[in-house]
Image 1 (cartoon, rainbow, N blue to C red):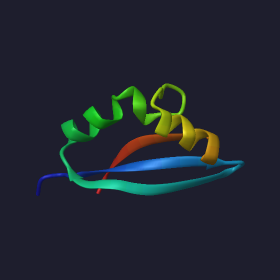
Image 2 (image 1 turned 180 degrees about the vertical axis):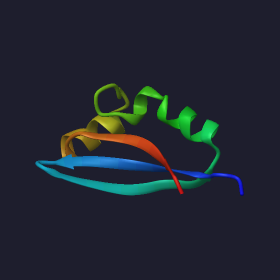
Image 3 (image 1 turned 180 degrees about the horizontal axis):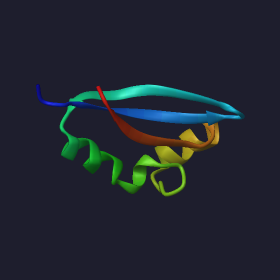
Image 4 (image 1 turned 90 degrees about the vertical axis):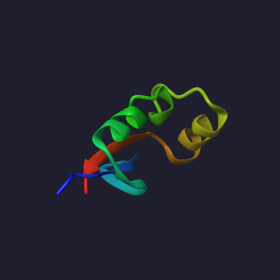
Length: 67
């Protein structure tokens, strides 16, 4: 069976870690491509919507994991 991946967005809160699933059923290439975008991390994002997310929710990142 072919492996698929999901995109998760992780948020750091003190010593806690919350995550939400953004997409499912992706190939490894698709998942890696998404996560290679600078807009998928609070450290490197520039778009207003992502900067606002950081201000509202704190540090975050998009990652992927096998489903």
